[in-house]
Amino acid sequence: QILGFREPLRALKPDSLTTFTPSRTVFPRGFLWDEGFHHLLALRWDAALSLESLQSWLSTMRPSGWIPREQVLGAEARSKFDHNNQQFLLQEPNVANPPTMLMPWRILSQQCTHTSSQQSSTCERMTATQWLDVFEKLERHVNWLDVTQGVTLEKDTAVSGESSSS
Image 1 (cartoon, one colour):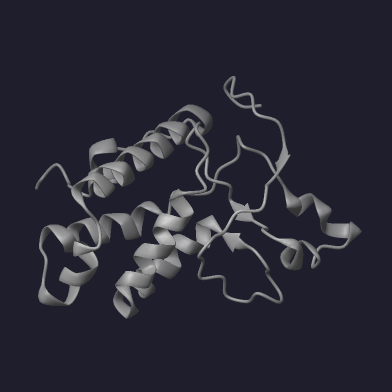
Image 2 (cartoon, helix red, strand yellow):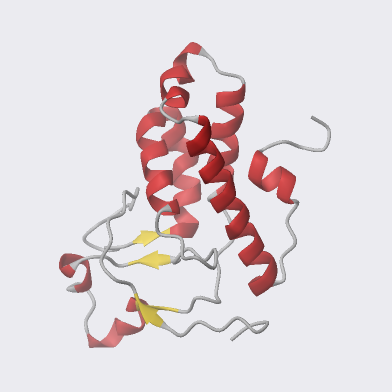
């Protein structure tokens, strides 16, 4: 329990997740921290697929703003964990990874603000309402980081992708 945040350890219920997991056989789970870095490349390779995955990760956010750091979903993934590493199946909802997932959202929002013909089809996939939903979720996640981790991020920069010099 950190800073009065009171959520118990919990196993994740099966959900779906589109992730750029590097090795399903060795690491049968999505890693939130890694995912932010994977998307730096994925946005250049297939922005539409990256957008789908980024939205998938945001859909796993809990009402508090917490996004589970490691997501072991489904019987196949759980079967890779023997009795010696069962602790990885539980998550502490007061422990965070660095917010690397903000990086690809920032890049994507900048690309869609200054749309080129290459990004236009990806940017057009999201309506203004969908962008608002994304920004509200990212703000909730940043607020969760502020409260639980004592991290102060510049919310206008982290969430909107704009800098104070823009």
